[in-house]
Amino acid sequence: MQRHFSRNGKKKDKGRDPTDARAVVKDETPSLLPMLVDQLLTGFVLRFMTTANWSGSYTVTYANLLDAWFLAGTATTAYQLFDFVKIRKVTVRAMGTGIYPSYTVMPSATVGIEFPGLVGGQFGSGKQRIGTGAGTTVPAFVSLKPDPMSQAAQFQPSTANPAFVVRARDALGVAIQGAIIDVAVTYKNSADINPAAVTTARAGLTAGLIYFGGIDGLATANTQARSAFVPQA
Picture 1 (tube, rainbow, N blue to C red):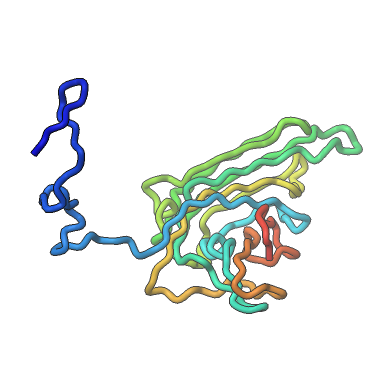
Picture 2 (cartoon, rainbow, N blue to C red; picture 1 turned 90 degrees about the vertical axis):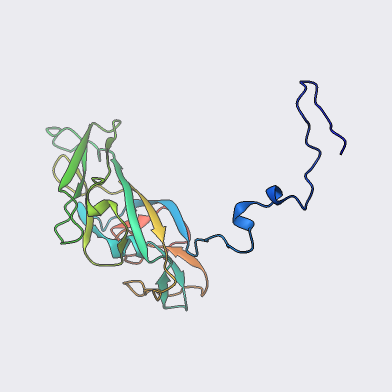
């Protein structure tokens, strides 16, 4: 067989003989088929913005996070796209709401996050953090990851158990509208679990279309923090 060499003296491979066993990749050997992952696993960052319905704080559940991205079955029924969710990080940003008429209170914003995890099997280690921004030009910022050794950092199914708490209030303790809440998650589905219906019924959906819901599982008109993505429902 003729040999071909490159300028550096090494043999230049012009292609292997297809009958050469070395040309067969191990995982393509007919006697041993490769293992495949038969489920969808995807990372995603949900973004929510507090509305006029915002109460100042909200306890987000695992069902809420799975309700936040759903598929319309009919005009009035919808189903969660995924069966499990894992929280990677939560971030909250807010601005002071303005100067008060009395001019005696500095406009500011305080935001907070907590992983209480008081439910057995979903303990969150009680980790919490706050951030404060003074004035109307300095944003309040806080970001927190669940303790890696806690169940809050693991995949969880759709339940009403608390996942984490988010807060956004001004200097007088008044709820701040327009606070931005980012939730970095990883979603996963299962072939052996029937799709769960979203907690709150919807209306006017287009069957087969994928929608984003509020942070509390409520429809856009009633939610405390609506999704920043479209379409919303």
